[in-house]
Image (cartoon, rainbow, N blue to C red; front, side):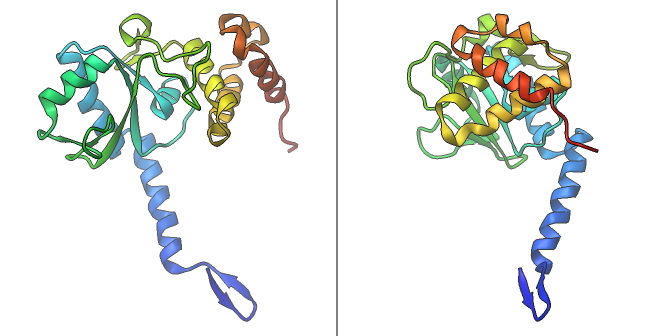
Length: 212
């Protein structure tokens, strides 16, 4: 911000970043952004090589009706699947973020690929009743990608937000999905018992709307 005698004004560079963000959001929701191209490339390779996967994170939420932008692709793999993908593609359109990292960078589209491994625990990473499942068993076929079923995705986000203070966005995501999907309160019965009370709490919050 630049200060004037009458107060503050927006720095032109910061203002241009704002409009760059708006333009990128427009490309994202039109499915023409770099993230979408990176996603299509990644799932095409995984499918062709029969590597089990499930899309998670913000891109998965978009498939379930929650329109939220993102700058990376989050994918669930097994350790064996990740190793197989790296053997085939590191140095050929993908690089590790750092030596030995799970995460990769799509060098063609300049998009990060964040990998979560089956068997890991959401949020703080500590053992809990909810863990990331094997995508070979848990994923369902969407129109173009493989996803975790909505109950599984929701209980993972609840377990994450409940155990990690820096993951409160996961709880906000669940609240928005409840609103957009008009989920009933008894949807909680589809979730692991450890997260049902938090779902009910968010469900009650989702019934309130801002005054017009």
